[in-house]
Length: 139
Image (cartoon, rainbow, N blue to C red; front, side, top):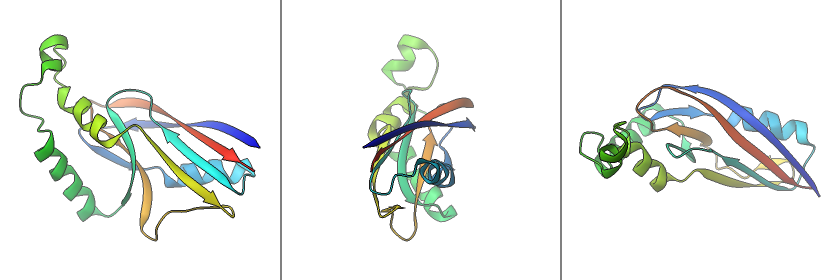
């Protein structure tokens, strides 16, 4: 069994910035020589999430609008009262979307659907520098 751990560095804009990281994940995978196993992408921190989506402008806007309805950015949050940073909404959104994603690797290919891409979503209320962890496990 082989375990490879790499990072992806990103500069984000915040406010539901959605970044397609599929090319970076595929590059790490190509260097790993793992053919069958699991690829996991993890976002340390509490205001970002990893998921798959059809990376198309309409779908991206629909997701942003849905998240604004579910966890509005313009209402009070207890987190904001405690810390005064105004990003309570970003913590709630990240908790709903989750900080990691695992994708099976079969015969050297990620088992993504035809239109699926792996994306990082930054929910914070400011730009940030992010380091995502990519771990490839398998044979």
